[in-house]
Amino acid sequence: MTLESKPAKLEGYNQLRTDFVDHLNRVVSSRCLNNLDLEEIGMAVSFGFQHSIFPKTSDGYTWFGRLDYTLDGSKIAILFPWHQDFDNSESQMDRSINVYASRYVDPKQLDNLLESVAYQTALRAPDLSTLRFVPSRTYDKK
Picture 1 (tube, one colour):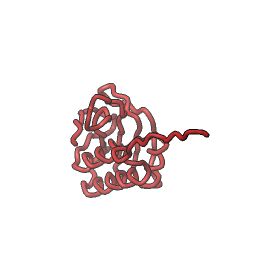
Picture 2 (picture 1 turned 180 degrees about the horizontal axis):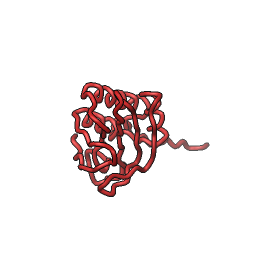
Picture 3 (picture 1 turned 180 degrees about the vertical axis):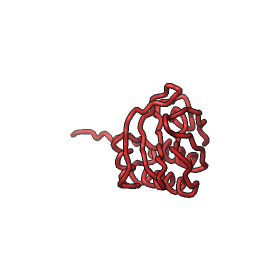
Picture 4 (picture 1 turned 120 degrees about the horizontal axis):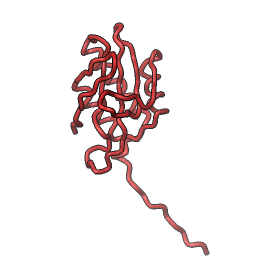
């Protein structure tokens, strides 16, 4: 599954593209996260994180949530989209997760950060693609 990464500016940051964004998209798209989950994921990855809700980018899109980290003096922002695309069979995510950095960051460090976010996401939220609906049983009262 590859979601389209739409170019969108975030003030003070440059948008980054890495293969680990695709991996993070796969992990997050199969789960139902709320912003409390995002905050817990952020804290589990690094104590010095910040979480915010409903950030906006230059294309006018209001994102679901945002996690901010610092790597080697560079600020990293990970923006999470809404899960409202009910017509898409692959993912309900409106678009790809976007990743931004305030300046150059070592690609290995960035990939490690994104992998940590994916891992913590997998630990905290069930994979909805593996859940099955089981109808409740009804019993006759005698």
